[in-house]
Length: 214
Ligand code: ATP
Ligand code: MG
Image 1 (spheres, rainbow, N blue to C red):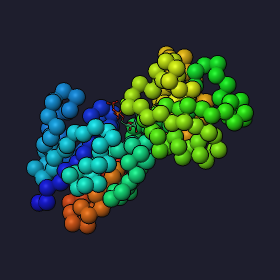
Image 2 (image 1 turned 135 degrees about the vertical axis):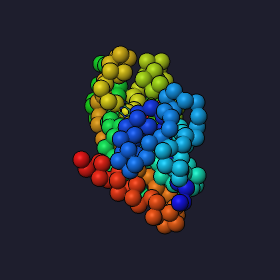
Image 3 (image 1 turned 90 degrees about the vertical axis):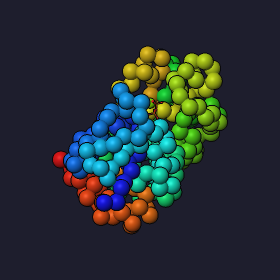
């Protein structure tokens, strides 16, 4: 048996990947929500799961430290996808990438007047491509979290962030003013591993695909 390594982040990606793993006959021995272990075994002795930051999943798979992983489309766009094969939209961890501004800020009129906007985001590449395509002039400010604070603290006019219910925006008196794209998580596979370990990896990919279609 060729051993394989699966990279997952704890939280929603791990939780929502569990049923897909189960469809492939893989049951992790522990949940990272309660365990501090970063390497988790499974019911199958040839499988191990490594727990990494959501943004690090593509990097582990790109360099072959993990053979497969699950990462949000947001994370994959920022990473760039080098060395990755991304065969499957898993339809999990769904949300939307949005532009948001303080309530009362007239975004449409600012754009119409050609104003230069300061935009804070964790998703610089996505934001740059979005505003370039729309011909909106922006100065982008890279943040690593709590984007909602940026307009409130006077750091930026707008943010680009993930929105699911809109509850966090509302709690901070922000409003979503532009939809950039729908986001969900994808299966990513190391291109070299897929060739060398196809006998082990292909059945897992197929089981994931079957479980997603249901
Ligand atoms: P952390 O929240 O620990 O700082 P993170 O934000 O990178 O890390 P998660 O919050 O688990 O990690 O997000 C993982 C992925 O889930 C994201 O890359 C995105 O694709 C998706 N996601 C993020 N926020 C939401 C949400 N509110 N609803 C649904 N999916 C989301
Ligand atoms: Mg998060």
